[in-house]
Length: 415
Image (tube, rainbow, N blue to C red; front, side):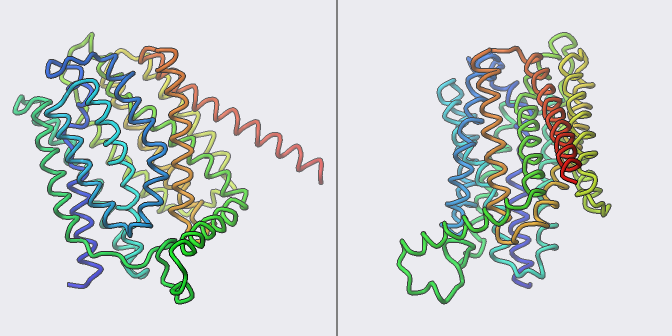
């Protein structure tokens, strides 16, 4: 078996098991249910918010450590953090321990950067498309499969929400074991460059050179106005999706208080994943010059997304809210794929992780700020939260329209 294919299979197995988390769509129901002494309000205000806060600095730390530690250790740590998270969910479900669990969960999510960048440090460029495709499909297959599995097991009372955590824990163990067999990485982009001129440099000089290279990539990338524009779109849309995704289970539980029907959280995750795959496919398949049509795409995305989120904040039917979430998620995946493509076309290849990491950091800072104001300070109920989340998209829409109008007025005056 060729080396690149072996790496692709190992990464795919790791990604599949890591995303096999059938208990995750029901974590709110589990934590606010009979298995713990935590109220639904505590889960929303004191547990979920911790994960949002800690993810912000951890993204930066994970990015630097991933390159410094040569990828593989972070991938192994990702699996270990997953084991810790679901062990705590099963055996220590108190408020304080769940807040600590969110810290480990933030680390678990942040380590994704090692998974998605390892292949580019270990595989020859000619195999990038195959490896990227294989790992991405395994990642999505794991998420979709776990959604269906969790839905079937809970709907037919084969397992309750707590017991689903055991399957997730087992998957984390398999993911960790798989990661141990990944080949080690010798050369990286910043701290361990394959450059003969750096062989005689001290460790401190190499680190200085690494940060200097990051600065060079930063200046070169963000000197392009289109990179700045698409990066803003990438960040604010990721912020909006993160807000909606984090508190979706809270909203569904609130809506379902009246109907008291069997929740379909698992199946909606599978449907959303499928729509996301279709959206990403169409974004890559249709070769459209978005640099000339970007304002049209921005207006369409933020207006439709804002309207959908505001609507779901008022609906009294949980299945309607599921449908809205799936459509919104598909639109977000489409927008993200286009944004990534537009950004990566205009920046140096070795700076992909740096620039997209900065955009993610900005998104998390915005998300943390909104969570602090809306949930921690104002203690807004979940329907009002979603009304504000939808208004965030409308606000961004208005800002882009104003910017575009002012830019054109200034351009016409100069002409």
